[in-house]
Image (cartoon, rainbow, N blue to C red):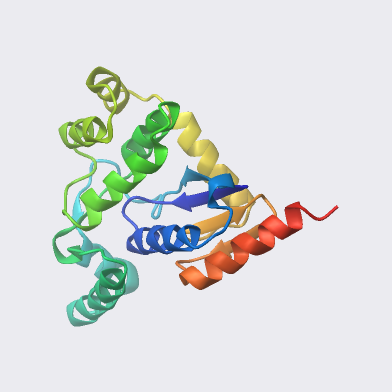
Length: 214
């Protein structure tokens, strides 16, 4: 079974959804048959490349909320993340264009490290408040993931895998994806959002049963 996940590395709900999916897989009787494939999605494709904006400011601009409302929203998401063992620092996180980070994840896929790279970038953004459009930061994170430094630097400073990122985004549009995380199971069942682990588990069982039905 293949589980495809459209996700962005600056998306707090995506990290929560990743943890809940992992919890569901831990309770799934046939988890060894499941391949999880991470697909690129740009949470805000209009965000200018080269711009860095504190997440609270970005949310206030995007939603029209007051600083107090933004703090309340971040506190709610932070509390939900904590239940999944994640210690968010959204108040100090920086919104950036994520194309370069996504290109790095496509390189990681070539080495069988797609999941590890996605995990490392999510943690860097949401827990460690690192800036994910900084080339040196991306190179360091890629090396920490287990990738060769020269390959990471070549990708980060060039435009390799840009087409693959755009293809993922285009495919998401074709599937009607408007927000992430978005999960597709065997191109048969889909779930939107950071669903409870129990919902994921039920979907996994249903997808496997459907695949085995003559």
